[in-house]
Length: 190
Image (cartoon, rainbow, N blue to C red; front, side, top):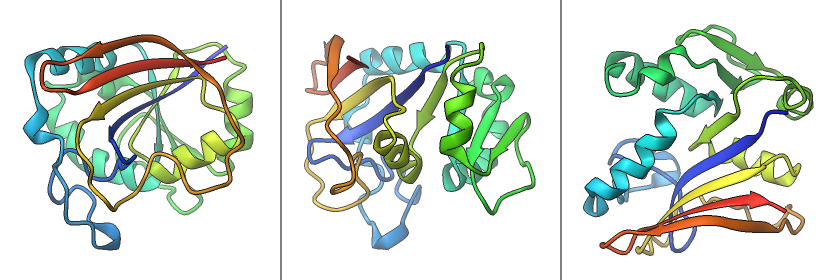
């Protein structure tokens, strides 16, 4: 059985929007992009690369897919696994692949329930806040890798929406404290 694993950069107040760059996601007037930059470290990079260089399928929302499809093929030397991984994209409007191999999920919740029963690599979800909300709301998330930064941003897209999610209990499997205060926590669903 395949698992859905959510991997997110998250602020203390739950913001996940635009962690890597100023213009990464400026929707809804967000002006705080690139907020993870001051916390970069060798130790943190090593832990993140461990996930990036594993065997996985990418599960992405439409906006993240388009953004990543423009970026990662040009930087295949940094993340070669993303080039060969199947990209499953939750979208009812996008039909043309810009980054192969790609599978479009027109009814992602229904399709993912079936895909999880098949054999194959686990699904890694990076970013994709709307998709993440739907996955949590439908109790499809099996594990979380949360990279928690000691910063409060105050506005922006959050890991969990207000309301709409029933309680889900996760158990801490491991956590790593970086010298700069960043905590990397790995949770699995009870």
